[in-house]
Length: 481
Image (cartoon, rainbow, N blue to C red; front, side, top):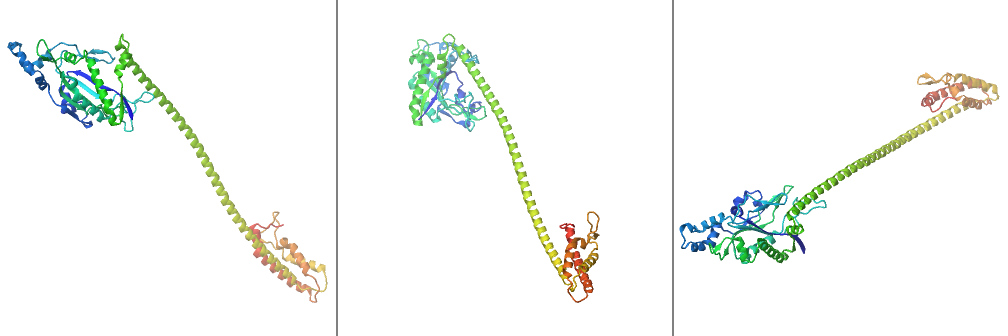
């Protein structure tokens, strides 16, 4: 079961504004009242006139018997004026900014027509704070109030307190009793918070046994004495003890245990007996310094966090830059590799194309040379073996085949300027072919037949030159030797 550490409230005031406590229209205009938060429940409705008539009207009639008109009291209304005019009693005081008590000039001295008692349990004063002493908020920007009790528990305690009030206090008559759920405030984030629900009782104290004046009189001091208390704070403590015990008894029904603390009393115990007010002012100043120091620590922490955040951003930027450089280099390398692969593929295709073309051209060359050799082989043989005749035939062929070759319509020349001819290109092959063919072992005139054979050879070689030789030189595959 959850234990809630909180406080109780039993505060007495003299002469409050009756309309402020009871009239909803008036309350709705006050800055701390928000009707949307809750209701102003009237548990007992009354008025000063009605209460004074009930308490003192019979005594006033008895008192006036046998007295001169000038000494008589003009009914309960006259007694109310007499109470207001009574100057006996001390001036009221209030707490100043430095914690000391000062005279409250806004409150008249003397007796009061009625008194107010504000009662509640739980509080919205205690706020949860972080390690630096700053107030904390929940996800909805509401203050976190660890001392707050469930409204239903507060209401049940206040209702029981109201119902038993006159039994414990036979010399106090309740005039009005209102349970306020409509008071609140806006926190530093602008969110509306509900203040502690509380019971406001307006009561009139009355004492009996007066030797002079009325048999029953308005007197808070005498009323307390007849109830067994010498001082007001003794009675106030007894009422607080009652409401705290009542809360402890009812709290388990709401799933909690309640533990009460008394911060004001504890601070008074800690104060020096010589000057407790001065010590209280010192405590207030100490608390202010502690809160200021908490602000300094928070500012330091925020500055450190911002510095670290800037450093992290700088480091992240450097890492990102390195990463981008690496990515660019990787992309460039991949692109280069792709281009190299594509170039290699294109080069391989070109090589294969040239290789096929060269193979085709070489095949054509072989075929032409075979035809040349066949033409030479066709020269008729003679019986006479004449080396000299073969040389003459070869020379004749050489002379006839010494015409310059052409390339792109221009004479084809060596680097030294000499013209390139069929004979210079294929002289050795032609010579060997002619000499091999001129085996003169026939009966016919070899010269006549040789001439015809040379013409045939000339035509074949010319056709070879036109079809294959010039093309080879244009491609640059074969260079003249």
